[in-house]
Image (cartoon, rainbow, N blue to C red; front, side):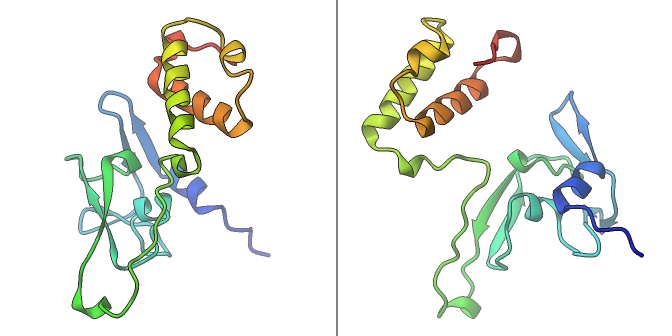
Length: 156
């Protein structure tokens, strides 16, 4: 009996090494013309990590390392081709960012203010988020962790 297939994200993680000096996730798996390629899907690993399935969406490299698969080093662009004129534009949600459309402008302002207070150590996470909804608490925590350095972090 054949062993079950591993999830794609796990396979990609196993076939890449983290370069701490330059913040690259360097692909060590198979390549095609010098570019990372995941078999048998025959796709670039970043297309899988960014969940890009539409052929009208192109994934473009921003960094200069040819084997880098760090999703933060890529941007997604929509191609405008006559072949697809009659189809609606592709819908793609970037998995690297949170869904800030669900918050009102006032809630977004409160989130930013709270993160600034946390970064300045003007209160604890529990004190500053006591009256916020769970979604706002999660967004505040995500932004706080993203903007602070690892040495300043305390677990909320």
